[in-house]
Every structure is written in structure tokens, then in C-alpha cells.
Image (tube, rainbow, N blue to C red; front, side):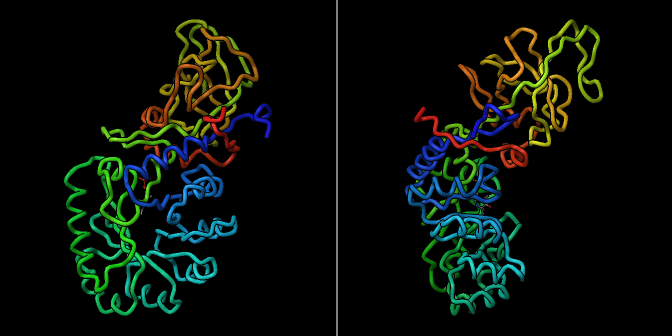
Length: 360
Ligand SMILES: *Cc1c(COP(=O)(O)O)cnc(C)c1O
């Protein structure tokens, strides 16, 4: 794995990942069901799940049966809960790969129960996305009495705001749980921001995702994650442009004076978003310089007029270099996107390098 030869890559600090998982588990006081859906938010589900497996989580959460299958093939033996409703064709895969579906309709519950395998009841308390509406759980009492779920859960829509919407959802959840004939063994609700704000969990397990990968809700939470992901790209060309010249598509940057421009081998085809143009900064030998003009599919231009810079140098677009760092929240804000979108977008052409910075 010679990053020397790479045009652009993502560094993933597994030591920081484990620190974040340990931190959030201590705050919650219950076992984790780490969410590794969408290829662990773009970090690589197998590598992330293998690393987290050493912390003895209760299981893992994925979105699709395909994601669950991938983890099984990689040798993950714990429960794997699938959080997106199954399509008809998914049932066989779920059985074959020993996955635990989340179900929210009578038909799905009856059908899955023929397998006599565990499943979790999805209760919708206000997200209005998936699961049985909280006030309709009572209408499933008969089927829940004969086909008992291993677990029951809900999902908060605005936990990062730490406001009354979470309280309302918790009340609805409690009401729904009370109508289930036999209380399921595994009750769960909290995503990362809910654990950050809520402290010890009153339920059985928690379902953190983004906190593990280095993103905090940023709304005065009690705990803070360490950064996990860095994005780096090499300088592939250097040029000096005269005052009045423009840079990149649309000519949206115009040089006010002579400028030295470095071209980085990374673009929106790698998940470095077009919207970062003229708004984001990068670190060149630890010095912060601006992105000039629109980010293109494969290349991005930055201003290196006042910094040391040579062809082949590795530039940091996300992460730390020297004393400075560009974090996910800052970069996401520059593109007016969510840090979740930024993380899950860093894939495709970008090779991942797993490191352990705490060992370095
Ligand atoms: C994605 C997801 C989570 C994790 O959310 P984060 O905000 O990333 O911690 C938890 N539960 C469900 C059902 C999810 O879909």
C-alpha cells in the first residue's frame, strides 16, 4: 500500500474509531449496536466492523440485506440488524445470511415468523419513514402475542437539537411498548446525538453511527469524538497566472494579482464536492490556503502563492497537517451539506488506508 504512488486517498484512523466507540459506550452505559450501513458511512464496512468487533458490541446495524451478507462473508458472527424494510426478494437472503430484519407490517411479521428467526419491531414515533405508527401498535397485539419480536425500537428525527421533539417521541415509544403483549428483550432508540445529549440509556442497546466516524452533533454535547477520516491528494501541476486570469469552469475565480496555482488530483468524482469551490480551504505543509474556482470532476486548484509547494506533495483536504486541521463539520459547512453526506460520498475512486494514529 504505497500512498506515495496514489493521486488521492482517504486515511482512516482505527484507533480513533475505537476511542469514539468506547467513549459513546461509556456515556450510554449499555452495549453498542454500531451502525455500519452505507459501507460504514463510506469508511469500509468490513474493516470498521472487524475493528469494532474487538469491543464486543451486541451486534451491527446495516441498511440492506446486501450489506449484511457482506459482513457475514467477512466472518462477522454477531447479530446483524437490517434497518430498511425488506422487499419480497430479500427474505431468502436474510434467512441465508442469518440477518435480523426490522419489521413494521402485519404481512411482513407473519411471513418472517414462519422462519422462527429473531426480528425487531420498527415503531415509528414521528420520523414517518418506516415502521408501524406508534398508535397502531395496539392493532398488532394479536400477531405480536403469537409472533414475539426479539427487539423493538424507534428512531429520533432531531436528536441533535436536544429539544422537546425527542421527549415527545420517547413518550410515544413508551406508550407503544406498553401495548406489546410481552416486552421484547432488546429495546433501543438512540442514535449518536441522542446518546451525546441523553447520557445513560434507559433501554438495552444504543445505535451510534456518525459519532464513531468522528462527527459530533456540535450542540454542546457531553462527549466529543476524535477525528477518524482524512482526505489527501497530491499536487500534479503548478503554474503561475497573471492578474485578471480566471481559474476553472465558469471562470468564477479571477486573480487580483499574479498567483501561483497548484492542481490537486482530486475532484467531485471522488466526493470532494463541486460546491467547495471558492469556499473551502486545504492544508499545504500545514498552511491553510483557499480552493480557487469550481472543483472539477477530477482536479481541484488551490492558491499556493505564499507557501512551499512542489509536484508530488500531499495536500490535506480533510484532517490535520501540522498544527492546523480541517474537520468534517467545517468542510461540510463550506459546501452547505451535512457531514453525513460528505462522509458517505468519499468513495468510488478513493483508496482507503487504515492507520492507527495513536500507535504512530
Ligand atoms: C443511521 C441510523 C442510526 C445512526 O444514526 P447516527 O446519527 O449516525 O448516529 C441509528 N438508527 C437508525 C435506524 C439509523 O438509520
